[in-house]
Image (cartoon, rainbow, N blue to C red; front, side, top):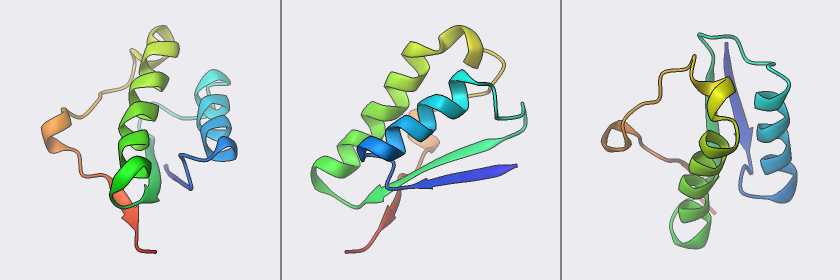
Length: 79
């Protein structure tokens, strides 16, 4: 299953991402895509959200394989 959260850096997007992980709504083969605006603070916040989710739910997320930072491309929307 692939899940994309458009506007992941907003308060609703962050909450949706956190609740999906906390409630174990993602299968082990799921891909969670965090989508936000390119450049500036929004893009930086996407990286921060990824780190926050991993830190907060490390025990629950151990079953997932995390792509190395060098392999990740931030999904962005043009304004």
